[in-house]
Length: 217
Image (cartoon, rainbow, N blue to C red; front, side):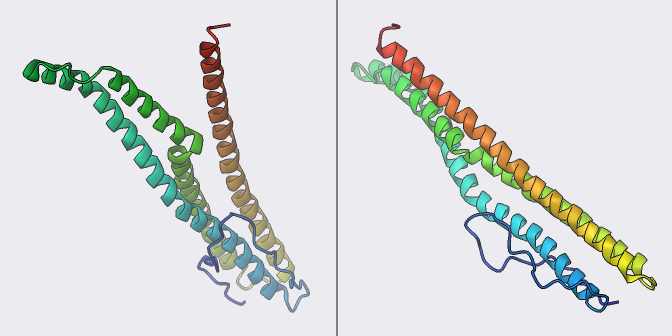
């Protein structure tokens, strides 16, 4: 029996969006070509998983950096807000000047809140965490599939009926591909939920500000 490729296929190019590749259209399930078609199907499903893993690991970098900078800026702004009254009091006592207005502490706190809001709205920190978890889950699923495939190959050695072996192999590929697409869909659903919650928060804040500007009317 022909040995199937055992290493996950790497994506040919870096896609800006995560989308399925073209399904192999040259599959021939006649007795003489079953093994070759099964090999193509195996390469397709493993390649789909590898492309998804690669996409999530590539995309996490920008989200991680932006999330880190926004959270760091928020932490620094909160720290500055806490120091402004102390610094203002020191300047006032040493130089007799009015010092720094406490209003700047309010400005710093507002800036911190703005940075956190941008992070939440853009989904940078939460997205980075989702991408890492999804990539790790897909990697684990890929490893389990490769082991299942090797077990399938081992138990099929010397089998008298090629059709049963082919049917079982197609079943393994179908189950694995369904799991890969399901994991990607789950991550997308989580993103949509986070985005909707961020929009609701922004809308509530805008409504409260509007009521405040109107004097509570």
